Image: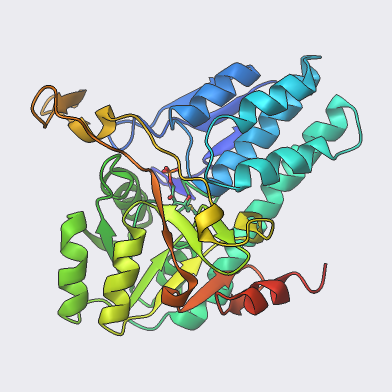
Length: 342
Ligand code: MRU
């Protein structure tokens, strides 16, 4: 991924700490921060300094390796990290990949690095397989941020877009702003701009309008957890886009690595949905004319707010699942076929 023209990753192991781009500062500033303990890594995940399902898994993996290097209690470290965010299964995929490494701090760090590299390879393969969905001038609608800030190096939903752009297909992306945290407006728009991909930010409420007018060829999002039957949890608002896509005959594709598929969860109803603080709804955050990040209230004092972070799109609304092992139906059979070679 390119940040201000230079290749970088959303997080990396930096000697004896986890370095990451602090996503809370974007798009105003590119800031690198460090987690030097399990607690700092856990807070970075909770506060969404790092976010996006695959990235959470990578950071959690490095954090467990960090605990081993510090000679800490690995069970306590695992439990602390596992409590950070409940929906993205990648958190546990990353933790388990490192925990199951041969005991020893060096082995665990090697496992964390291997998991990180495997996620990069998976994301790139998603992009390669996703080229089958691309065509010249394609108009893609996405939601939240499923690009290289959420997934090392390529992204999931945006990986085929980046591949298509590099192949000269000139894709265009409608970016849903993604209230309440505005990952689309703040992060996706920023990374598309860094890569020189044509895009337009739209209010969340405008998505169905553009689908109805035939201005969208493909809806492409990521996922935080795909259940065994193909139901998929992703950022709140994904479900309404899937409904609108179905109503207007536009394909709705979920791009996700195998680390996001949870065959132990039978269906979407069993996926835990994170409920975040009401202040993310009652307030909005943005940069003022002086470039200072500010938070302002938009609701009357005292109005209550609810803030589910994710919703579940039923498999019946998902045209297909794009993974590093190819494109399959979002069904029990389609998902089982992905794991046949294991
Ligand atoms: O709350 P966030 O910002 O961590 O949510 C992220 C999303 O919902 C992404 O769409 C999802 O993790 C897929 S990222 C490839």
